[in-house]
Length: 226
Image (cartoon, rainbow, N blue to C red; front, side, top):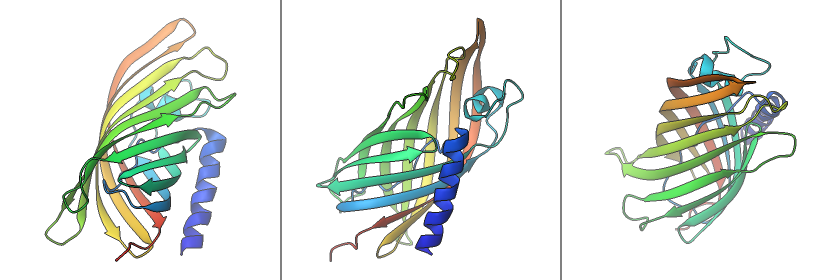
């Protein structure tokens, strides 16, 4: 099963990198930091966010760009003492990430984190996140995960004539199903966004949108210590 998930995620990630036409917007995760290394794979799909927003994740599209936005996020992180550092690839957008848990794990954990997009030569777009995480234990014993996130996409087209940016507040809600060496988080998120771009001397926008994102992530990690 793990090998199948890895192969599928790898193929989807390669497709996203080749097209540059995908993003996950956010990654819904637990607020509790797990010690040691972990590998997370996430797949997602959004509702069509409108022509203005969808242009940023479209291939060779000048207008009538509205379509669902797929996303594949692959991240490697290392956690220690209620803090974690990681690197990842969200479609065609590489990033570095830091997160700090702000209370003890026996309480309802919460924390703050940030993801900084890493510029790539020849690729003029980056994505950045600023987010909070909060875990609430349900009566069933499972954890409800709340991840409010500020998402910022900015850059320019390869020919340098179409600069633009897109800013969104995205509220992610997920449920953690934790196993011995894997954790699964199905999630649903709602985003409210504003964007603007230029086409030569023409200003397009500002435009506004509301969209939803469905996602599933699988994290591979060490077994929890007794």
